Structures are given as C-alpha cells and as structure tokens.
Image (tube, rainbow, N blue to C red; front, side, top):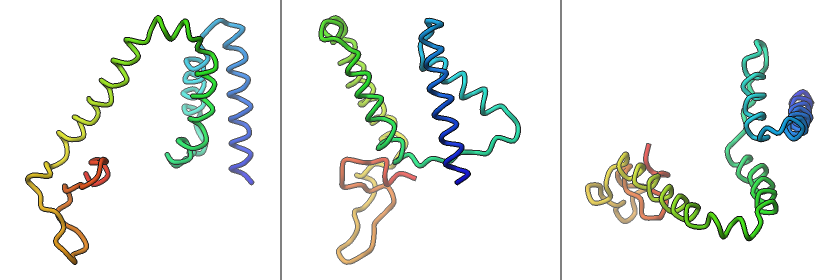
Length: 133
C-alpha cells in the first residue's frame, strides 16, 4: 500500500507541475524533469525501481498518442525531412554503437547442434544487444 501512495503522490505532483508549466509558458517536460531532480535530491526519499517494460507498456503509449494528437499535418509537412533523417540516423547510429561494442558474429561460432549455446557474441536474430554483455 505504501508504494501505491508514493505513485499516487507522484502522479498528483506531475499533474500539478504540468498545469503550472502551461501557466508559466514553460515546456512541461522541462519543468517535470526539474521537479523530478528536485524530488530526487530530498534526503530520505525512497528509491523507486520501475522495470523498463512497465515504462514501455504503460508510460510511452499515452505520451506518444498525446504528442501525435497535438501535431498537425501542416507542422509535420514542414519538418518531415529532419524528423526522417534523425529517426533513421539515430537508429543506425545506435545499431552501429552496439555492433562496435559486441563481438562480431563472424569471429564467434554459432551453437553446435544439441548444445545449449555457443559463444556469447553470436546472435542469429535482429537484436544483437540481447547477447552482448
């Protein structure tokens, strides 16, 4: 019950901060980050551990939906080139960073038939980061 109270308090605080951001004409995400940093600096505040899967399934979809609702087609037409270049460019850059950090599949061996695994760098699928440790 204590965790539910903390999460409820954080939701109320985030709503209050977002409301004041509109009145102060400051971007809400910037003010929310500052509020989060301020709360994190308070001594005695318990650490809140949230699994990344919960963020990906619960937090990101409503944020993406709200952002998509606010973006007009006319605004998207004016910025489509930088958005496209950044989206593909950052995906390729992060994939290159992971590939540069992980061993090459050519230098590692695939798992032998009947064995539970091969070398740690071998990744047969599209997620090379999953096998890189």
